[in-house]
Image 1 (cartoon, rainbow, N blue to C red):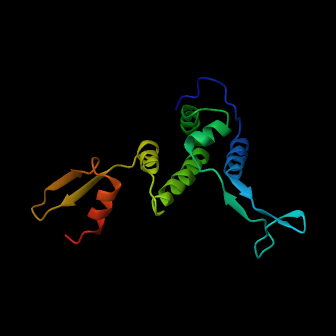
Image 2 (cartoon, rainbow, N blue to C red):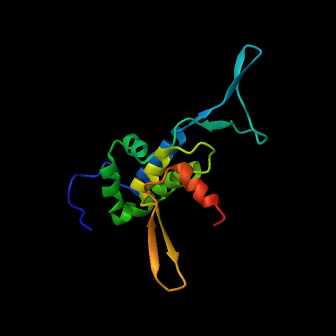
Image 3 (tube, rainbow, N blue to C red):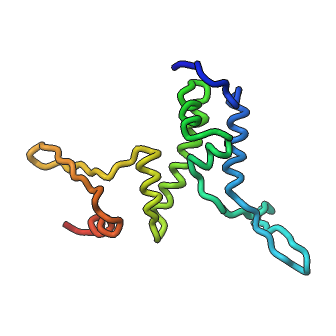
Length: 154
């Protein structure tokens, strides 16, 4: 891998990881409640402040927070010393997007994100007894049609 090009904004894995951790933390907000005219944080049973996610984890959000672009993330990922750091951040974002598929109201944007950022495809291979592998393109089906197909007994 070539290391030529623009100078790196993050010169160490530790500095990059610290900023990535800050990005994920920035997607959450503490929960507070007013009690006797005083605002107090809501605590869980362990005495930790309860937080809820207010922004989704996204590749572009991470890139923007790092002061770079999607291509900048790819450039970091192509460097051996930063590969694991960027890959782990992207896996966390992918897991977040994948979990969104299981929410009652599925968003087409989630599917778009998984296809375009993580290589997911709408293809299913079926093995027949004749030993021929047929691939069925499901890209034209709606989410509702895919759900009906997944729930059918035939």
